[in-house]
Each structure stands twice: as C-alpha cells, then as structure tokens.
Image (cartoon, rainbow, N blue to C red):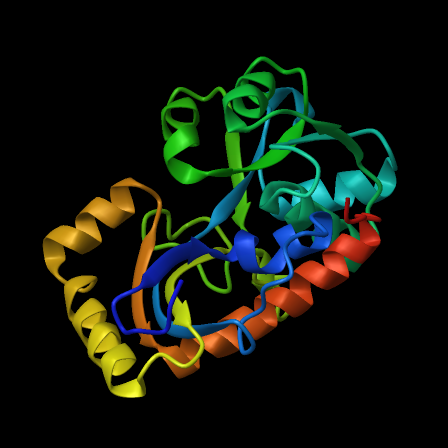
Length: 241
C-alpha cells in the first residue's frame, strides 16, 4: 500500500494488537509501517450468563466465581480472539478461575451459551438482544470504559476494575509517510459523517458506537489497546506461529 494519499485501510483493533501476537508473519506496526488517521467507532462486548448459573448481576458473578473456583465455564470465539483475551484480562484482574471452552466463531459460541453448554461468554449486543428479551440469557456487564447508550442500566467492568477497556476499536489507517494534510481532511470528513443521526442509529443497531476522533487520539487508543492485549495475551500464554 503506497503512501500516496489515495490508499487507506479500515481495521479493527484485533488486527493491530492481537494478530501480531499469534502470527509471526504479521510484522507491521502503527508508527512504523502504518499511521493512524481516524478512530471511526468502538464496539463493546458484553458479558452474558446463562440463567442456570443463578447470577443476575456482575457482582453476583464475581462473588460466585471467587467462591467456587473452576465451577464456571466460559465460551469464546477462539483462542486469541478479543472475546478470549477480554475474559483472560478480567480473570487476571479479579483473581478468578474459569474454564475456557473455545469455539470457531460467535456462530458456535453464542448457541452454546443459549443452550447451556457454557455458563458465560463475551459477545456483541446485537447477537444477544433477542435472547436477553426472551430471558434465555442475562446481560451482566460491558467491556468498555463506560456504559453503552443502548443498555444504560448494564454496568461496565471499568466500574469495578478502573482502566478496564477492551471494546474493539475500528479506524482508518494509512501508510506511514502519507501527507498529513490529506490524512487530516479524511479524519475531518469521517468525524462529521459518523455523527450524523442516521449513521449513529445504524451503528447502534450493529452494536457499534460512533466516535470520529482524529489521528492523534486514535494513535493513543491503539497504544493502550496494544498494552492491554499484550498483557492479556501473556496471561493466556499466547504464542506466535
């Protein structure tokens, strides 16, 4: 991808913070090969429990998990997924012992939770809303820095673990060396577009929260995301292959 001002990519945070941990061939890095242009949005994941666990709030879950180490199983979209590393980070911070059951994507893990094959997992809100309304699962908390406007009554884990933020970033990047005036223009345009009422509404339907921050702000988000995911990956004993 040339630094010509015409070539940009849209990426989620996992491609920048997780993929290099598990793929030896992924040697790219923001600040070296890529430069941040605009943080489009963030997509929180939600900790969800099956009713058979008997927990109805995040605090109840934490108390039970501490009291009964290894009693709860948790599903994920696979080893090294954001769902997996968010749980590993939470486990490490709270001193919890949970049994990991990895699946091949949310298309397998979500049905497993609804069917009671696993006790808890992290998932995007749109994939769970119908099951929440029918009482088949219980929303406990989000992995974002603050509560979601879509479900304001559901707490964020950050309220219990200060600084905890594993919501997925989605942004635009360019090849390092791309003219700054072009990157700024793209960033300014995106900031206006993502805050349009119809765009905000469509994003919310997809479980995404509009941001529209500039390249400097996005770069800081990437740095924090890399630090958090590296720490979680170490706890999960991820190895590049």
